[in-house]
Amino acid sequence: MPTKTAPKPAKTGTDSDVTDLGLAKQGRQKIEWAEKQMPVLRAIRARFEKEKALKGVRVAACLHVTSETANLMRTLLAGGAEVTLCASNPLSTQDDTAAGLVGEYGIRTYARRGEDKETYYRHIHQALDLKPHLTLDDGADLLSVLHTDRKDLLKGVWGGMEETTTGIQRLRAMAADGALKYPVLAVNDAQTKFLFDNRYGTGQSTVDGIIRATNFLFAGRTIVTAGYGWCGRGFANRARGLGARVVVTEVNSIKALEAAMDGFEVMPMRKAAALGDVFCTLTGDINVLAKEHFALLKDGAIIANSGHFNVEIDLTTLEKLAVEVKRQVRPNVDEFRMKDGRSIFVLAEGRLVNLAAAEGHPAAVMDMSFATQALGTEYMTKQQGKLSPKVHDVPVEVEDFVSRLKLESMGIEIDVLTPEQKKYITSWQEGT
Ligand SMILES: NC(=O)c1ccc[n+]([C@@H]2O[C@H](COP(=O)([O-])OP(=O)(O)OC[C@H]3O[C@@H](n4cnc5c(N)ncnc54)[C@H](O)[C@@H]3O)[C@@H](O)[C@H]2O)c1
Image 1 (tube, helix red, strand yellow):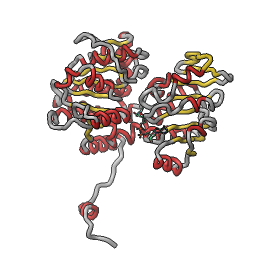
Image 2 (cartoon, protein in one colour; image 1 turned 30 degrees about the horizontal axis):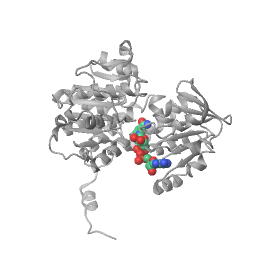
Image 3 (spheres, rainbow, N blue to C red; image 1 turned 135 degrees about the vertical axis):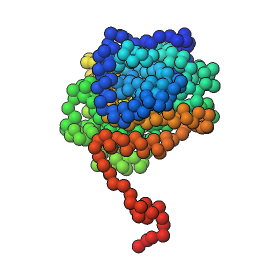
Image 4 (cartoon, rainbow, N blue to C red; image 1 turned 180 degrees about the vertical axis):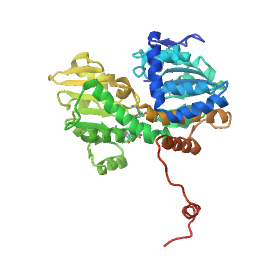
């Protein structure tokens, strides 16, 4: 959650802050393992290395500190950029990866898994001490601190990139208020990102997070998905694939209709609350599971969130309603005992369950998101001073390049329009 009163900036040039540098070798192994599944990003890195496309560009990134992100950082570094990285969520950091980034690749990194709010914001300030030309965000926290507590740095910033839906929503709200001071590329809104990362990445890794935390059998059980956007679609379909009965809740009539025609049961949360064995919120909205629903949950219900911020489940109220809270009945599972004897289990403190309880998206899908990010960084460097301070689309050429190279890496060929076909589909004269 963003805070209104962030702590004072740390000293300029402060060294990295990670949990245990002794984990660096293990981190490198993990980073190299992910790299094998990221052929598009590898190809971009090879070109960046040759051309030094980002020479002298200072990039501050606030992203989930995972092995896939580490490969994006290596790509920017290979292009000649000076980079620094902090976490975009207190629970998503892989401590070995963070150590590997510092110890094996010399990348200044500020991230400790489980860091408190104060440390989280101190780390953002430390990343900003680089005086970035470009910012990379996942949720817009770094950009938001730049626009509030570090306004002095704004004049040096050329632009930014935003990785997730919630971040884009915040940026569009800032732009509408006239508060956004530099152009930002909506990486999330590129087809090479949301169609694959949000759907297949979040879908699979959210199931993975819930299963790793609980060892729960999905087959034959009722799973409730709040939200049928790109992430919700992915999760609902994967849960169904495991044999679950899947219920969808929505507030958007088109998405609700789509879910119904995709064969899911659709109903309001006040009805679904009594039916679900497992709940997962994927909306980007606040209090989707709230007081009125907690009263209806079955004994043993498991609740989780995979939306960006930990606001989708009203945990403050749940805590007040509980007569006892047992932390860590197993890793990433807290038990809330209610007055009537029911237990409700909350996963990963209501934070992104796929990153906190599992490893986040598989590298093969982050290959596309981060290839888009890397090319976006190059694009924003070339566009320095030319774009207005609002949210901009990723150029189609970037999407085209990433999708073509991904297909090639998968050994898939596609047809090419003949000149006759090209002419036909771009003209109006021919009818029946
Ligand atoms: N876990 C991850 O790794 C990960 C990855 C990508 C995106 N995200 C985050 O997941 C969230 C969803 O992203 P998306 O790309 O699917 O967004 P989206 O806009 O495609 O979908 C969100 C859906 O939630 C619905 N919704 C909003 N309020 C609701 C409510 N009260 N009850 C039920 N439905 C409601 C909306 O109508 C919409 O259909 C965002 O916060 C995004 O930043 C997480």
